[in-house]
Amino acid sequence: MATEAEGEGARHAVVIGQGLMGCDIAAIFLAGGWRVTGVEPERAAWPRCLDRVRSSLAQLGADPEKVEHLFLVAALEEVGFADAACVVEAVPENLDLKRRVFAELDRLVPPGVPIGSNSSGLRITDIAEGCATRSRMANLHFFLPAHLVPGVEVVRGEHTDPETCDRLAAIMAALGRKPIRVARDVPGFLANRIQHALMREAFAVIDQGLATAEDVDAAVRYAFGFRYVAAGPILQKELAGLETQLAAARAIYPTLCNDTEPSPTLARLVAEGKLGTKSGEGFRPWPPEVAARERERYERVLLAAAKLLAEEE
Image 1 (cartoon, helix red, strand yellow):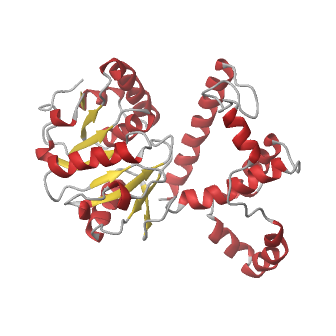
Image 2 (cartoon, rainbow, N blue to C red):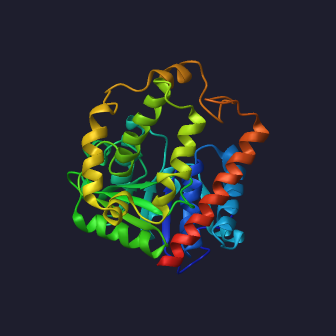
């Protein structure tokens, strides 16, 4: 593990929270030649963090030994913020917790250094409420697994200076990420709003007995979703013809689910503790060896898809 003095001359990023997302975000910066200070209060978790970062670096095609430029500390007060060029918060999705972290960052981080929150749904406007320097705070939303999914949402809050978003987007682009600019601070930002519209209908067809979970997955992976690696939904419809989309929309939209409450099937599974791979069962059983094999396959396919997209750049 590096000391703060090592990697002198490299740009310095601070990543707060070293769960899966935080470790993978740290790996992105390390692979790009930055040095990173990672804040993780649980010292017992540090070996696991380092192992995850090494693995993520290897998947990115970078030298796993770049983990030597990751410096882990247990508290924000131990971070040398003086030369930080970027700060990313990746603590659990809890508004009170994030507000406490941002209140400390407001005080500790030198003025002008951009601060991003990796919140997946909480608004930066709410997280940064009361912060004197909230103009340099924005959402910087990565998608799990962060090091393999190229897209990163850069969301402007109600008080965010546009220059903050410009700087964060430039940093992400230089690290090989695909910045996705979101002009307003709404729940779910951009990608999750589109994704949850899909998920509402996906769960609804299961509730209605139209299809099984397996068939829903197959319909997305091997039919319309298969095309999304090559073209997003708007471009795909332009290639096909917008008049076809209009006609289909008029026929289909009246029958789509527009419930404002989550799926009953989803709510029941969660109430029963059937959360998916983390609990050993969801729509299907997940023995540990099966879950590990499926996760490995998932990450391998994501990596191949990311390489295909990178070849287009």
